Amino acid sequence: MATSDNKLADTDEKIFIGKGEETAWLTLALANRHGLVTGATGTGKTVSLQVMAEGFARAGVPVFAADIKGDLSGISEVGEAKDFIVKRAQEMGLTFQPDQFSTVFWDVFGEQGHPVRATVTEMGPLLLSRMLDLNDVQEGVLNVAFRVADESGLALIDMKDLRALLDAIAPDSSKKGADEGEDPLASIRKAAQSYGNVSKATVGTIQRQLLVLENQGGAKFFGEPALTLKDFMRTDRDGRGMVNILVADKLMQSPRLYATFLLWMLSELFEELPEAGDLPKPKLVFFFDEAHLLFNDAPKALMDKIEQVVRLIRSKGVGVYFVTQNPIDVPDKVLAQLGNRVQHALRAFTPRDQKAVAAAAQTFRPNPKLDTARVIMELGKGEALVSFLEGGGTPSMVERIMVRPPSARIGPITPEERKAIMDASPVKGKYDTAIDAESAYEIIQKRLASAATPADGTGGEGGGILGQIGAIAATIFGTNVKRGRLSTGQVIARNVTRSVTDKVVGGVVADLGKSVGGSVGGSIGRALVRGALGGILRR
Image 1 (tube, rainbow, N blue to C red):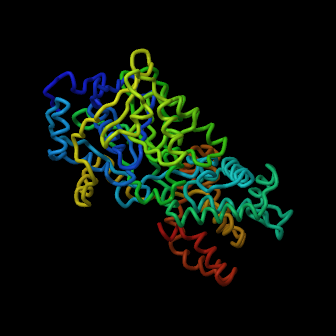
Image 2 (image 1 turned 90 degrees about the horizontal axis):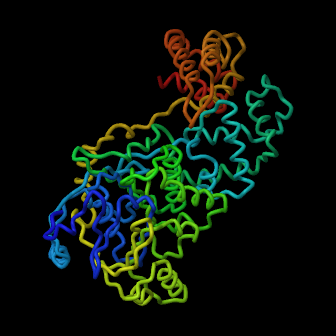
Image 3 (image 1 turned 90 degrees about the vertical axis):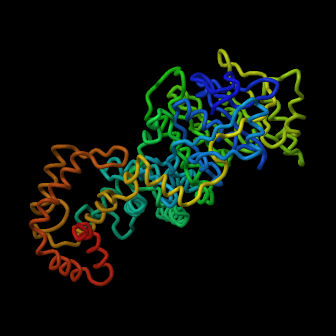
């Protein structure tokens, strides 16, 4: 954006946010000290978020933001010189010049953006328990399931893997004391019980909660190819930061899924990125809209995790900006980490509202010229009280400003514009097709199928020449599972077996299917045939 006063242009060191009696600047070197954008509905939070996102992108800093209402998608299109925008710019001494920013759209449901997936193992038992709203006992059983999966070499990739594993660890009174020959899942059940009592009732409750999550569309989030977070940290050909927008209007219908998903992303960034120290600008800025959903009814273990991530992720070069209505929505320990503040108007109609206004005023460094609590209730649309870190990281005195107008479009884009952006996306084709790799579900089904196959050396896991080849390869190269993916040994064992199978099994698949189905009988026989031969038939 050009300006008639060069002193108000964005620089390599700071972003121009707005102007009142004083000019408000966000220093890039201090932007990873996190921030907070608050205000009542309709007071301009989304516009402030867009102005900040545009400033970071100009500075070459990639941005991630959740788009709750669809309004933020306009950042991808050229802004319009509407009268109120031009007038606001002129009042600040700016000459409005339309602009647009390179954007990538993401969508957990894969409808309005590229699909976002994670493996069950990557999500982990703590966050998954939060997503499923499990109590302490149920969370304990889920932890047991993850431990057994690690020890048994069972990769947990999607929901059917987790369901199959939970079924496997549930006690079966009809097979109590059975060995591996009588019960192909005996080793899994025994391993689970070694960590304490795993009751069938508790497993059943977890399974029902998984069904609720599936009905909300959460099953689409688990699978492969899993998201590579470095795809968020791109710049375009002009050196500007890419703006990553999570389409969240449908996702917000499941608030717990939305909040847990964003927390998972933060946790992954924290775990994967190396220490960076003090940088001249962040590696990535993460805007967390409707942040109160993250903290509502969160158990202590999860709150400790959130506080740890917020406190330490700045050393990885990531800035986190929470967007919510009231400052009291954010716990004090987290609030203390948010050095850059933008406060839009609040209304004090109830005792709780009055408490929120007082709390908001107290979070700012006082300005003798302002009655902060009174001004918060008087702010007009587009106005804000701001305090940004300066100098050695101390907050500036609170100032009343008018937020500058965005350069890109304000408001949503059309479906045709969205499609054109996705067709030109740098990650087009990378995540759009799901992959169903061999994992816990397939392995467990093979064990069950092998128990139903006659021991004639022609079937069963570990039986016959095919099983022996796979076992040798797995022994040589190891069977460790990391982050929900197959190890070198597992991949080689699978590929060697497939290669031989393609040449040997083609002529006998139909006969073997009839044999297995006939020996077991009925619907159970057909289910086992699907488990044993489904992968071969698909290939």
